[in-house]
Image (cartoon, rainbow, N blue to C red):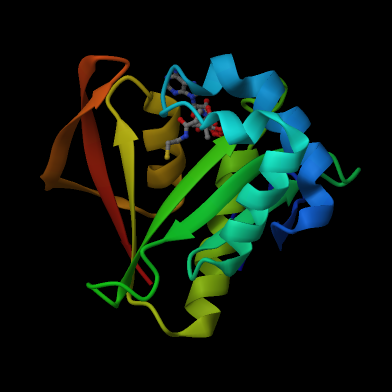
Length: 176
Ligand SMILES: CC(C)(COP(=O)(O)OP(=O)(O)OC[C@H]1O[C@@H](n2cnc3c(N)ncnc32)[C@H](O)[C@@H]1OP(=O)(O)O)[C@@H](O)C(=O)NCCC(=O)NCCS
């Protein structure tokens, strides 16, 4: 059932990445790289040239993990969302990662994407938990997870290196 919050979210289409998306992905990653690198590691150079990006996409398609593109009602590529660690221990858990283009911030695309993945994974009935990490300098990401029903798991907090500085990542878990 939709809540009033969900009713305000934009319509989206989620589809697993394929080679025909190469040009759109190139534009999306190139135009947002500086924005994304504030919070997440930089993409490899192969992402920024069409021939090498096509190979990256073929590798993603062959990977057991799932890599989705998020498109708006007008078919514009507005974001990406991934399910990782599929087929790996612990087998009941997958890790969610997502990004939304700079010009589409604050319109509900991340929440709509996370809710769509939650609904899909619930329907598949193969996983018990979704987990995600949000950096402590990224309150928007924590907000997205909490709004979608994830709970903060304080014990799962970890520190990584980002742009040569330590960065605290908060762990969030959703029981499907
Ligand atoms: C985090 C990110 C995915 C959010 O995407 P988005 O489409 O703008 O998110 P939504 O619009 O669905 O929701 C964002 C929520 O955070 C809130 N928010 C935004 N900036 C905020 C800030 N600086 N402090 C607190 N809350 C903030 C918004 O108000 C909104 O909550 P609300 O609807 O309750 O008001 C996007 O900023 C992004 O791609 N960042 C770079 C990559 C990244 O950080 N990925 C996550 C790591 S896995």
